[in-house]
Amino acid sequence: MMYVMQVLTGKEEYVSGCVKDWLLQDGEEAYSPTCEREIMLHGKPTPVTARVFPGYIFIQSENVIDLYFRIRKTKDRHFLQTLTKVLRTDETFTPMSEAEEHAFLSLFGPDHKAGISRGVIRGGKLKVLDGPLKGKEDSIIKIDRHKRLAILQMRILGRYMTVKVGLEVAEKE
View 1: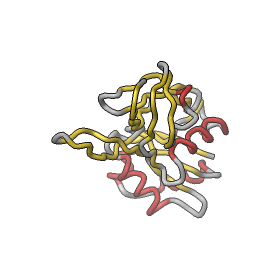
View 2 (view 1 turned 180 degrees about the horizontal axis):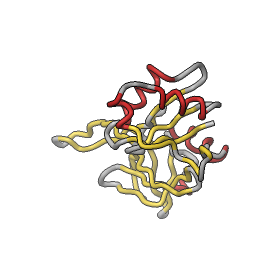
View 3 (view 1 turned 120 degrees about the vertical axis):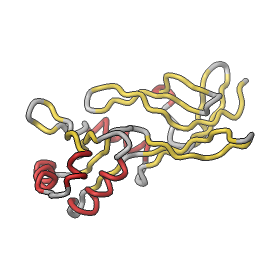
View 4 (view 1 turned 180 degrees about the vertical axis):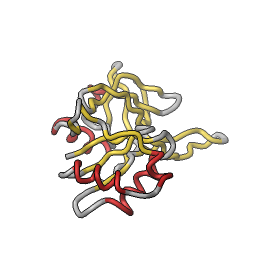
């Protein structure tokens, strides 16, 4: 099951590293997904990597209550100050639904990184030819061709979140 933990923005890599190094057991995973984008720098397209969900890390665990108590037992003050909470409903830790988890994993893949998708616009409709957005054209709510981004909506823990992912539109007819 996949859970979401809120952390201080900018500390995602630090917290996921600490959780990986100190607290995770076999079969558990912690990460903050990233995406590749291209920006124009000095007139040349330059690849950059950006955090997709600032302020959140994702935890794969079958026993999140045990992980929560392992986190609370840690003595590292700096680490504890960067955590805010594991998202929950009332007093129950809320995992992502199977559909949400499937959509999430299909976008980010096993390396937790969304690569740059490539597509074309024909007759006013986007057709993604390759990349993680292939087949997800219906989820895209906006295309920013200047910034080479696709903005899509994903449902996570019952709420819709906007996600920016790299998209190169090769041609427009």
